[in-house]
Image 1: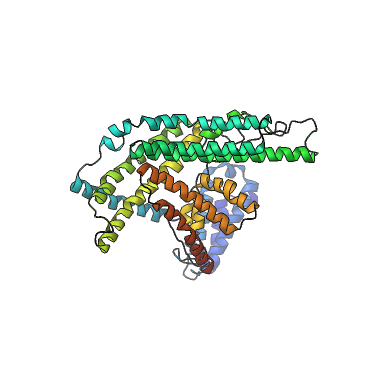
Image 2: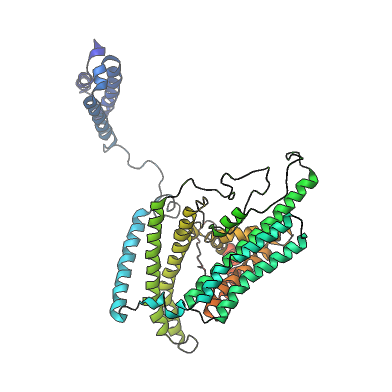
Length: 480
């Protein structure tokens, strides 16, 4: 008979028998009675298990019993050691989405006021000549130079074909690749310097030419290494490779074409015909299954918006400040410092917009259209603790190229790590100077000095990080 009793009868009976006990024992027994009635009802009444209303009542009664027991005045309120949310030991163990949203609201409010103040003071300064002027439309030599740059990868491919057929020696192959890569860089430089081109036209062609140079170096270096591996396999007669297999390396034209347009600077290919063949016969890069067309459209709209915002900052803020400023070496020192600090905020916004537009939006759009799978174009450089970490994380395509074709080869040739790091920064400084000085027709070595100045900063910040390991030392030195 007891098994057929309802849970409510057992709770009521328990409440009646426990009326003479203390309040604390009453709460404990009531919680026990709820548990017992739950198990009894499961064994004796199928209707009680099927009824959602009764199950809900049992859950409510159990929660109420927990509340009665746990929130009595005699219960302890402090049970363990805890840190404050903003203490140094706990600040990175929780989310700060609310503070982030608050900062966004403050930034929007402050910058909205600055935009209104700027429009009242200067008016609308943006015109179509900033992007498309009569001078930029006359830059047809630069446009033709850009269209002719694919001839250099084609020449490099022909050199590799000749090397595969043993028509030329290895020393001649290296010499021809040096000529091709050097010409691919000097040709755009001469065209920009000889033509009175607009800044945007030269500033677009020069980075594009540098990218072509980096890709050609990677293609030549990788092909050289693949030929060396093929020769070593032939000499050692490795047991994993059949004797009748063709282990010679042959450059794949489709792989080279895909590499030249892909968002990467490191060439890779399975060159051995019997080892691996890509399913699509294009390259060995990781690839996605399909293209998300709607996602591409959304990212492209973002690219247009942020590019326009970057142009707005340049025209409305940076240009008026520069035009209304004196020469920094001819005026007052405090005035020059004030001008530099006033330019620092809009310059920071332009740099962040450039980073977001190129490394996140454009490279992801290009990767999606080509179904390129590796989207690690940058890491969390905003959390970099040293200058060395920052340079390793903020531009992953260039970092991978530097490690693969500059830093690691130096270490393999017994060059010390410090010298290898200095060589890497030297190459980076040369290309930064080319990308800035050539379009501006002004060789002052400011970009070169700015990059080379990072070398002592690497040593200093690494020393501070090793000395203050337990403290939150976070130094940020943005790229020039």
